[in-house]
Length: 97
Image 1 (tube, rainbow, N blue to C red):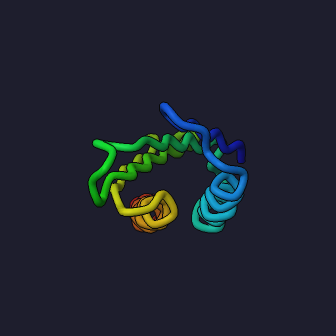
Image 2 (cartoon, rainbow, N blue to C red):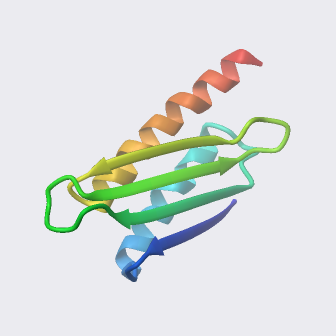
């Protein structure tokens, strides 16, 4: 699986990139056919709490793309929430088959 991380209007740290890769890689356990993951990070209204937004789009051949968008205090927390949401979506797509 190829993981593309795009940070809008800031540079993501190497540590954050490693965290994202580790979390998103685990989604393959739930669906082996995931080819790409597009992760977008952005800060919404700086200077406020709950201002880190993470969006993850999974590309799966012969399936609809899956998408989750979460906002939290930190990017790590937002990534965790988005990955959890995608796990539920992946379980649902498996049951529908």
